[in-house]
Image 1 (cartoon, rainbow, N blue to C red):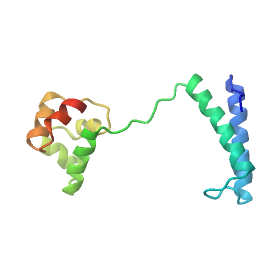
Image 2: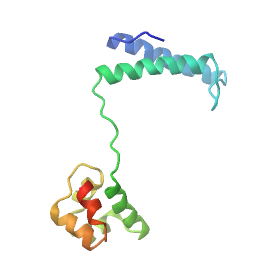
Image 3: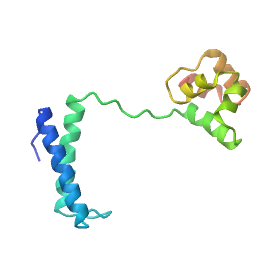
Length: 131
């Protein structure tokens, strides 16, 4: 399929077609896992066109992925059955600040980085690379 979507109108029309195909295929039992049929192929083709349009013309932010440092902090808290509030208290920071750090909305400051190393025992190289 060489066609490309070049307008929001084409995109919306294609989206409506995909939704209609999904509804029809679901009603007929044609969207079971690992099925290969006209419905699944057409939905896949149209979805690729939509994805290309989204990449080129729409300002959609990618999902944030947690860094290994954030995962390590979360693993520490989880392994000790701690609540986020207790983790914040352990690190001597406000619970809101801690939540923002874990969600990637706030950078880790040097004092917090030092506490991650001293209190949680997180590898300094990891802290330096991902803080």
